[in-house]
Length: 307
Image (cartoon, rainbow, N blue to C red; front, side, top):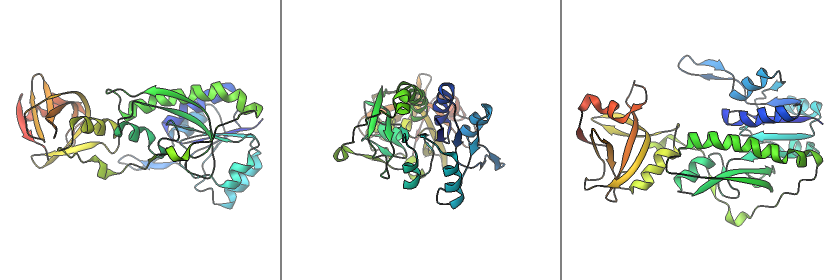
């Protein structure tokens, strides 16, 4: 039985490690090394680092349209492929090549939030829960039949980064639970209801700007949903101020966009008569700090207008 794993970022590593602990892995596929950081030095993706640590064979094709990629894959004779956040559209010939299927662990409760950024959009929309779906990959965007799901509530303290870390562990557990079924070739997934599908497009920097006239709860969700990238920021005294974490929501009489702070905390007024607590902030050239520490150069207490 030959198994391949396809994934790239850190969120895929728990599933790779769990799979490797249960069965031999013939090959691991991930994106090529990319320049990272200020020095733009080549850095291996997290999945490659984890795979090499376990002495697994790693392949990093630039494209699945290249004939050499097809030759490589065909030569491996893979029976079952597991995919987590790989970052490539897999061609039909590859999907048809695995007798036991190509299975994806997608970080949403399909058919809700098909696409690249499901966790972020679940938080933005105020969903009460999210989860992981184990689905058979088809040519459509996250439209394949679903074998199993696991659910996780979304709380007001959850941001996208932390929630995705917990879902990564859920994905590893979900695969472990259903791996015997996949290997036996007895999986019977259920088709998705396409009429209920919603879509989660890629994030972009334009989403980082806050519109202070919106309700406080929506701004609260925006900050949590866009961590760590693209983040959320406003402008104070002509310079950017990045909002990295938020806390409580309370009533206020201050106009929308007012940033007020004292020894009890920092608060940003929204457009519905409420303010959200800012707990972590970042100024240019500085690390992320507690909000009052970031605001200290302007005094122990004060008021500014965020724009």
